[in-house]
Length: 209
Image (tube, rainbow, N blue to C red; front, side, top):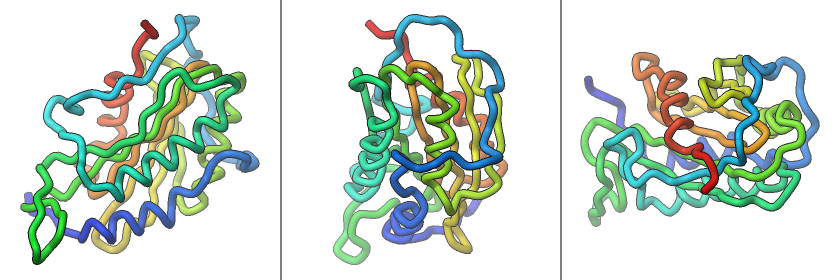
């Protein structure tokens, strides 16, 4: 399948314009309600996979990392305690290369990028944390609840403005121990970003050691 090849700077620009600070925002109506209760599990932590989904490698694009780390910092402000783990990074399916003509770029047709921002600690009100996160994303539309998966809590996904040729899907989860956001850039509907989101969360959220 041939994919449109937007410049990395255009993708970063779309994300920067969309993903604004979440901390301190008032909740908004229509955000997801809990799909199933958070299990009474031990404290959880966020672990960064060396390979996401088995084959995706961590991006070396500093712009992607800075955006993910900024969102991670905002999530720390929504915790009721100090964070005991956190991550803000990005993954790509095709390895990035550098050239004088194009700078750092992803060669080939597969231009998909996954940004991840997540923290763990104590979250007194997971519903409020989820509401504040989506309230801090004013350009993310069509937010709807999705099943959070076996880890429980609540989750929702929406669509961000990625331009005419680049789709942006934003999924957020919240429970008593973790808060995280996965942003899919350049994913087609057939890529099933919501289904991939559940797999990614399962790889990130682990029992505290």
